Image (cartoon, rainbow, N blue to C red; front, side, top):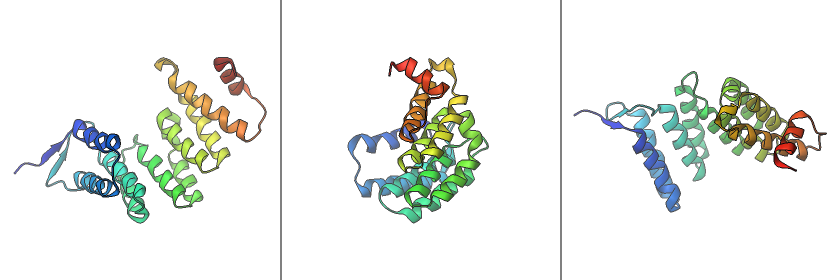
Length: 193
């Protein structure tokens, strides 16, 4: 029997269904197990266009963390990072958050250093990683990540990511009581603050 092809629509549906319904811990565990199987059982499942092992494993790791299975979450996140392609950095963001949740800030910073290329090329990854450090109170690290991502943000998307990262960076600099710099002044001009 041919393996079942996992499409992007199937992945999206699996992810959105439980979020919208307010998933129970058992439902999240079941989803994590399904995503893990899709990513690792090549005899039963074949990944369609746009679906990667790393994305499936990252999502499974997040679900394990949500239900408090931190050891399993960390193990699956490490698998996701190992499965990631050279330009796939979302697993790094997941792993950073898991290290932070486990109280290992130094490990999170080490993974952030490894993900520098992704932060410099993908403003979404920059915001995910920066937000993790900001929420952990690591404001200098968050500022660094937001600044790197800001430099990479493309203004061709109507400036949405540029403005978001500008706002994020301004917020952490304000929280650190730093004086205004050029980016801060630009943010205040854009927003009228």
